[in-house]
Structure formats: structure tokens, C-alpha cells
Image 1 (cartoon, rainbow, N blue to C red):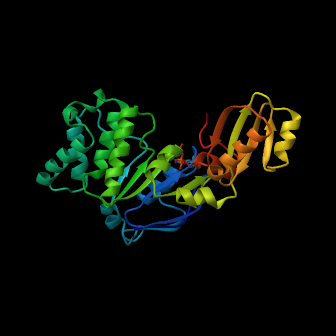
Image 2 (spheres, rainbow, N blue to C red):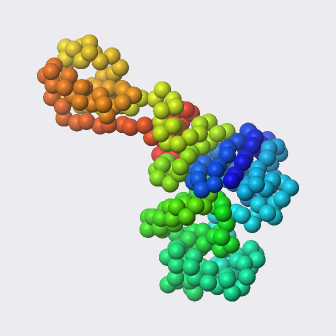
Image 3 (cartoon, rainbow, N blue to C red):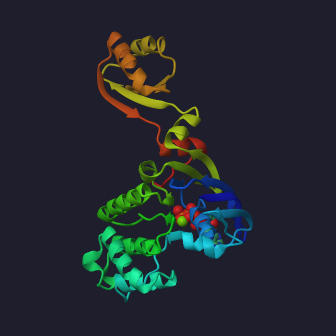
Length: 308
Ligand SMILES: Nc1ncnc2c1ncn2[C@@H]1O[C@H](COP(=O)(O)OP(=O)(O)OP(=O)(O)O)[C@@H](O)[C@H]1O
Ligand SMILES: [Mg+2]
């Protein structure tokens, strides 16, 4: 459904995209996960025809973006990172305006607005001016405006940044529903929990490059990353530690705790605990650190996905 090949984009001296490529089959929710400045918005802006790349090709629903921008645009809905709404108008009128831009016929548009407003939980407030809305409500109108013309493809650029938990949950549910109905979605985020929950496949983007790509399971197993179980003891002595080391070589001691590393912590945990009991160690705390997108990103780049 979407083919992106070798996109490059330079702003003055900044190389924002250094050759981005990915293919997204119909019905997939694809996550672009990366920190601030990684190139997520630049990629989405090129795919939405808002800016032109210096190099590279995009095709959407079989149409080449450069040769057939109008056909491409008919097929896509865009939820931009920056919300653009008329604050002095109610949500309903904003949606009438957007629907008009997409050439949705008037009669059909009114029914469609009612349907979408309901989907996004805005029915009660649809006639109030947008300036009276919370950030989360504005974001929901912004999403509604992208769906009016029933696009086959939806681009969502960090749709949950800076909004209340209730709106955030509602947006997740809407994305899940659209995905179930077969929509192809590109979802950018720097929250790994969102990508893990919503996306079938994830491209990890950093400094204008996709540095890893796959399903969560593929990403977890592609590197030689290990899971860690941290066990703290009340009576960890040098002798007891030596007895453990004799049996388990992939480990490290930190004061009263031992970090055990394993490719399969689930399978190894009972063996580790048994060994600790055998050498007379009293366990006071166990912490299992699984591999997630945050640790994958850290191991690939040496950086945190998000500033803490
Ligand atoms: N119009 C522009 N002019 C100059 N530089 C730009 C412009 N747009 C983006 N950049 C630069 O390109 C790089 C990629 O920016 P982009 O907005 O695509 O990142 P992002 O992944 O969307 O980040 P964020 O999570 O902060 O939204 C950054 O270094 C940014 O400063
Ligand atoms: Mg951005």
C-alpha cells in the first residue's frame, strides 16, 4: 500500500533524512519510533505532499506521489503534529470546512461528521467553539478532520503528545478500531509503549535513518540482547558469590545484588533461584528487566529514546 524508497531531505545544512526506505502492506499499522529531531515529521510531511524530498520515491495505493499527487491525496488522511483549527469556530464548522476541502458532498458530509464526532467522543461539545476545548479535545477534532473523506491510509504524527490520559485512551481505541477495519496506518511516536501496543511493525528512526525494523518480537531477537534479572540478597558474601559464579558465568555483582543475564530469563529464572537457595542466599527482591523498545533503542544508539 505504501512504498517509500531512499528518501533524502536536507534543510540548509541539516541532513534531516539520509535515505529512508520502508514498505507497508495494506491494513498494517506501522510505527515510526524515534527521539526528537529523528526525522519523523519530515518523513510524514513528504508522504503527505507538504514538502518535497531532495531524492527518493514514494508511492501510495499504487500511485506515484510525484506523478499523481492528487490521487495519492485522495487516499490519505493526515493528522499533523501541529494542530491547525479555527479557534473561533465550533468543531462542527471546522469539520464542514475540512470536508469541503476534500470535496465530500454536502449531504454525505453532515452524516459523516455526526458519525466521526461520535467516534471521537465529541458529540456533546461539537457546537462549542474550539477555543473552549482542552488540548485533548482539539486533538480529537484534528483526528476527525483527517477521517472525513474515508481515506484508506492514515498518517498520525505524535497524536498523543501533551494531552490528558482520557483523550489518550480514546485515541488508542480509535486507532485500534480503524486498524481492525483494515485501514493502513503510519503512526509516529517517541513513546515505546504506544508503538508496542498499536503497531504491527516498527521502524526505529534516529538521525534521519531507520536503524532497525520489524515486529516487536523480531526486534527483540535480532540483536544479541539479553534480559536481566536483578536479585538482591540479605547475606551476599564473597564465598557465596564465588559459588554462584562457578555455576553461572554471565552475571555481575553490584553490592548486595547480582545481575544475571540470559537470552531466556523465563526459562532460566527457576534455575537461578534454585542455585541461590543451594548456596544459602536469602533473597529479598527480584527485578526482571525484559527487552523492550526502550532497551533496544539504547543498545542500538547508546541513547535514551526520551529525555527523562
Ligand atoms: N523547516 C525546517 N527547517 C530547518 N530544519 C528543519 C525543518 N524541519 C525539520 N528540520 C530539522 O530536521 C531534523 C528532523 O526534524 P523532524 O521534525 O522531522 O523530527 P521529528 O522526528 O519529527 O522530531 P519531534 O519528535 O521533535 O517532532 C531536525 O534536525 C530538525 O531540526
Ligand atoms: Mg515531529
